[in-house]
Length: 183
Image (cartoon, rainbow, N blue to C red; front, side, top):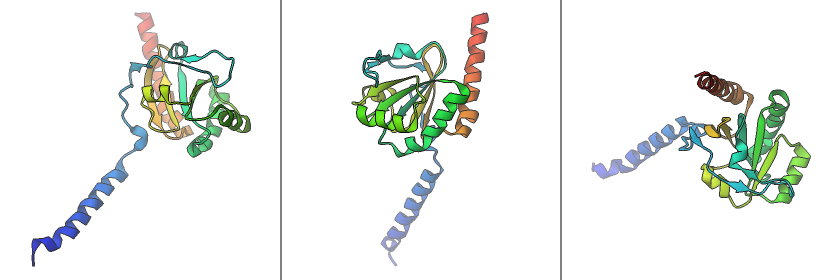
């Protein structure tokens, strides 16, 4: 019997191994080159016409969640009630980045579901999303008061993610900030 007879079996075993490894990866933990770096400089239109533009400078002064969403995003629909709850209970400053959308669709979507955002940047052509390395929606960035990106979460924000990742990071960076202020 020739070794060539075993090629399909070898190919199948290699394919199963590759898929098996892929199943163990966590897409929410994609590395980001922007962690511990300042938010890239930008200025985009506000979703609400007549309101001031949203800028990278406006993402300073307090901890901010920058949430990338779109009316077309199915997971954003699932995530949205928790963002509303998070805003009501935690009072965290939340900035939306409406990505690859139309103003009309985004406004209707928010009118139906409520608006947890303090302000919303309108990123119709992905100008800011590309600069932040956004790969899909939803994505949520934790930005500290100095404008540094401290964390990037890919996928739906949930109570577990908020309590187990975001809250401890806010506490950690708040303590670091307090220590630096005292020095």
